[in-house]
Length: 151
Image 1 (spheres, one colour):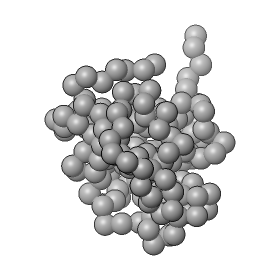
Image 2 (cartoon, rainbow, N blue to C red; image 1 turned 135 degrees about the vertical axis):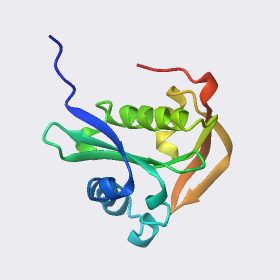
Image 3 (spheres, rainbow, N blue to C red; image 1 turned 60 degrees about the vertical axis):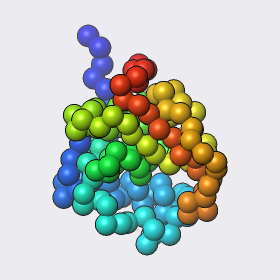
């Protein structure tokens, strides 16, 4: 009998996601990456679908959001959970939600060190490097009709 995964992913509206997503985003973006707190929270959260990863005890360990127009953002996984498939599960959940909404394409601003992660899912790089909150990023996009499904 295979072991159950050590985490689960749920897609929620902001009212339910907020108490789970906030501590993860503040830990990763504000404390680890020194993003100013006032830049982290915006008016979009209330209009997004939020994927939240929870450990087996129900504690939040990762999050990401899908904006109404098809932009994925605020992907964050707690340091001790990185490299264990949490980010991939969050991204798959957001891509599934984008497909459910009938979106043909999703875009995102990838931090430069995370580009390889998104390339594995079939994202392509668009445009030149730019900075958000002092961190180098590249815009990436994925046509949902031609997406490979990595394991």
